[in-house]
Image 1 (spheres, rainbow, N blue to C red):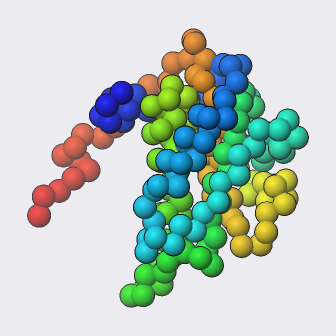
Image 2 (image 1 turned 120 degrees about the vertical axis):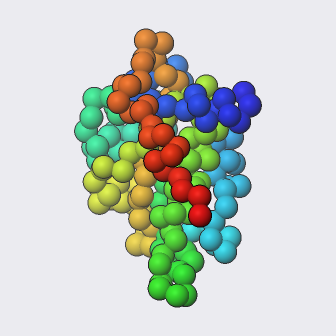
Image 3 (image 1 turned 135 degrees about the vertical axis):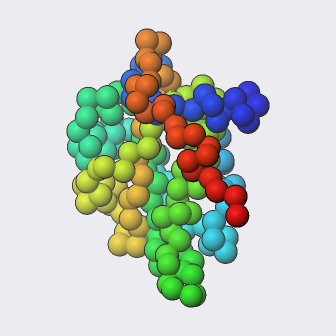
Length: 172
């Protein structure tokens, strides 16, 4: 796929097939995150790949939605605020921004590989932190359920609606 096709094809997938995701595909996703830009190149992130049944069960307990339980893999994107760049003018911490960029690299690469995922931020971070035995400095920021989209899956059209360009951009 060319890049424009990847962008247009990306959807939030909320129904997965039972087809397993191979390690090589996951490594490609992680490599795409590794190459993502970050403020001052501090790379304040760590990605936990949950493939064992024990880890997946623990992650599912942090966000108990039926569709979420169907994922074959979960990637937990964590940020380290002690290692992130802070803007000198106002102290703005760029950790969440850096994580968002890296996560979107994963999402776009997943689309390119025929995989599906969906940003999940509405989860219990304390449950994830405990389940993964995260050290104090790492904050779970995004959960990415991962798998091949189910054959009969159709994205909710409400989630595909986008504002017109004239509404989101202004030339000055």
